[in-house]
Length: 221
Image (tube, rainbow, N blue to C red; front, side):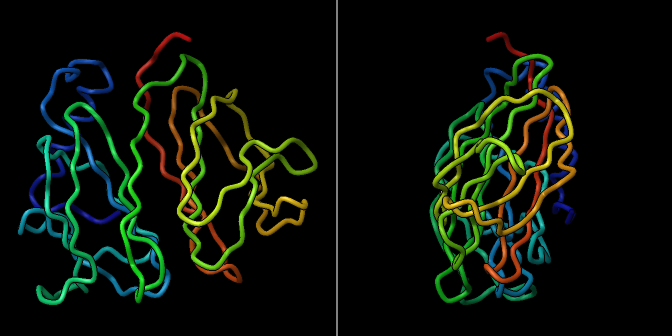
């Protein structure tokens, strides 16, 4: 994980408050950033003209950064530079919500893929979703090896809805809809009261995963 510039401690404190419900009326949102562009260099991320993340390399995922509700200008530069951003885009966030923002696609076509994150999970369950961020991989399913499909029909830039599963160690695989395995994920451990996002990244011939997890606030069904 890369360090934040001056705001990491605030982020951890705010996430902890939200996990206990103490920040339910907060005007801040939480945003984490993922470098998912396989041929892009290490990058610096600026928000509203100020540095937020420095030197994030491919597959780096930050912790949550607190941002005020409303629109923000997000710029991503090759690390160590402040001209000719590879991405310059406005991101609007709502207070009390959390987001994952991925820099995805090849460098030539790099773009932001934004998803709202869950903050609650049924007590004793794990909550899981899958994101397809491999620019040249086909549409895929994710399921148990020799077992049922959990997520189906995920194409590039798709981030699925969440599913709640029993905590356990799962023999998962990424496969094409006709059942051909692309990547085995045997030994995927899912803990209770935890929220997971599993991103498929890199090119199709080098497919791998980035797993993000965070504690969830307990909720009832």
